[in-house]
Structure formats: structure tokens, C-alpha cells
Amino acid sequence: MGSDIARRSMVRAAMAAPYLERDEERDLAIRWKENHDQEALHKIASAHMRLVISMASRFRNFGLPVNDLIQEGHVGLLEAAARFEPEREVRFSTYATWWIRASMQDYILRNWSIVRGGTSSAQKALFFNLRRLRARLAQSGNVTSLPAMYRQISDALGVSEKDVAIMDSRLSGPDTSLSAPVSEEDGGTSRMDFLVDDRPLQDEIVEGLIDDKRRSTWLREAMGILDEREHRIITRRRLSEDGATLETLGNELGISKERVRQIENRALEKLRSALVRDDPDMAAQQHV
Image (cartoon, rainbow, N blue to C red; front, side, top):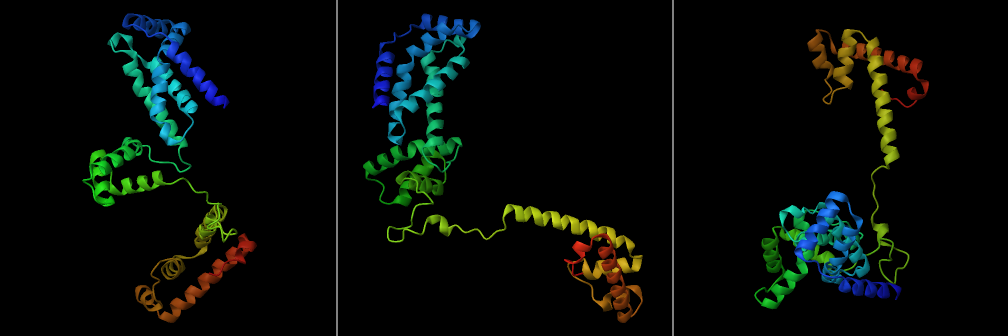
């Protein structure tokens, strides 16, 4: 009730504000731009509040408070005043219209839904023009199916048919809370219960990365105690994706398979001893 009274009072004040002639408007704009004359800014803004109110009425079908739309439009009006260049000989109302509309549209996009929509110019055009184009095509009687309608809207606005279908679905129904019950009969189950994520938690991921880094550091340092042949055998047998066979390494080194196995076991024992010496707690977790 209070908001309606405030809006009516605002509308009456806007309608009572005098129109500005071109020369007066230009003089006020120069005073504001060059001297930051607050009185001049107030006169410009007051004279154009009817433009803000008119613009707000065009967006009333989005279900947001008209008072809020007017306030956002006023912000756009002040932004236009800050950027206006009176020397270009363009009427302020013509210049301000874009800023007022853009401010209101941004507000609607931020608050119309809890789901953030697209912010590209094409997505904005789709959001604000879909209902109008849909109604026009339906009245024409030339469109017999939804796919055909989506195709025509897609061509008109330069977006994909998939984007048109998704936006049409969003505009056709309200947001639904994930905490709401799936059905009245099953009041204990919410939609959130069906969004189980089996992936590790962030702290578990970070913990794993830290442990992996520690193990890599330990292994790099421990490998330094091996001689050249031991290092080569462990690297080829244990640290490569395609582990080399004993026979392959024996042929490369000119020794028997059994000898390769013996050298490998000796190298592993060296690594285990180094691990126990440097970090007993980590050693209990390793299975080299």
C-alpha cells in the first residue's frame, strides 16, 4: 500500500515537471558538464522522469516491482546525464532513452530469476523479445508447430533454435526450489536428494595433490641413491606406462633375465631403506 502511494506521488511529480526547450536543456547540460551544477542536474532529471516512468511501464509484465524499475531507470538517467555531450546537438531524451532502458533490462536480468541467464546482446534480445515474437507468430496463423516457430524466432534474433527452446521453457514457468518436495505424497524427498555428486570434496582433492607432490619429491630424492643401471631398470620397469619385461631389459643391458630381477630387487630394497630413514610415517603407506 505504501509503495503504491509513493509511486503515485512520484508520477504526479514527474507529470508536473515542466518540459525543457532545446536551448534551456542545452544550457542546463553545459552547466552540469562544465561546472557540476547540481541544480542543473536536478532540473534535467526532473524533466525526464516521465520518460523513466513510461519506460518502466513497458517492463511491468516481468513481475518485478515498478518502483524498483523506476529507481533503476533513474540510475540510467543520471548515467546518461554524466555522459551527455551537449555540443552534439542531440536532444537529451533521445540520448537518455538507451541508458534508461539498459539499466532496467540489467536489473530485470539480475532479479527475474534465481538462475543467471545469458548476458550477451543476442541473449538479451531473445529474453526481451521472445514473448512478443511468439505472440505475433501465433496470431499470424502461419506457424503450425513449435519447431517451426523456434526456427523463425531463431532467424529473426540471430540465436540458435536450442537457445530459443531453452528460453521459452524458462519464461513459461517459475523457478522451483531444490529444497521443495518432489510431490505432495512424498514430502520427505526433495529435488536436492537427486543431485548427488560422487566426485571427491575439494579438501580431499587438495589433500591428494599435496600427498602426490610429497611422494614425487621423495621418489626423486630417493632415486638419487641408485647407480646408473639400477636407475634405468626401476625407471623402465616401475615408472613407465608400458613396463619393460625382464627379457627386454636383459637384452638391452647384455645380462640375463634373472640378473635383471636381482638388480631390480636390490634397487627396491635401497628405495625402501631410504624411505624408512627419511619419513617413517610415509613408509607405512608405500607399497613400492
